[in-house]
Image (cartoon, rainbow, N blue to C red):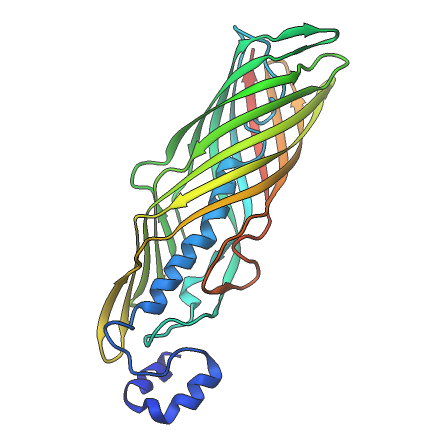
Length: 331
């Protein structure tokens, strides 16, 4: 493709039919204005494509994995550590089609990769609820979290975290039914988790680069969960809604183009995204004396994401399956 683009600089009239048959790349001679237009649009679509996947790794399923019922009031607490992996797709930027004479819509290649996430959460009982037959209703827990996002460097895409990998979140849980010997635990929870500020650099070839800086992503999650312990084992599951809000400070492309040499372009205005998704999950837990081991699988789906380019394999708003493993300690 680079060979054809170089030839287009001097012989565009002769090879225009050949280029038109292969792609929709404009066949005009590259200029300083057009040289980075296509790469700039690809950078914007890279943001739109990756944001929902990263947000799913942050939000996960149960806000306190392995502890879905309320704790029972003051003096009770639990602390948990979890790791989450989303079955995701990462754009293979080194295989993106190149065009220096303007932007055009193409199918961008992707590769299947796990999107990792990890965090620590805590639940603190503040109200034990009102007694009702074999259970309590209206119990309240305060929820806290610390989200950890590791840096990634693969497939010519590098994700860095200029303000650190940790972000503190908060929420609350209200017991609709407190779990007892005969009654399952049913609760309604709210959780606010935000992503640490992210910078993304993606390289294509030797001289072409895409930059997404100052990416901020906020997740707001509502969950209705039910759980029941059966001696040493327990089952739990839930359904909820996630709202993902994301934005970036700068989207920029740098290319080395024929005729004009090195060119830069910045997307104005910077893109943003607001996405509402449905989240379903089920899990198992092992109840030990002071510890609980828990695992869950879930799926986030729904919402609309608009991109100029298409993506191979799955769309930007495709359903994403995830899994989490965790351990809890509580009293």
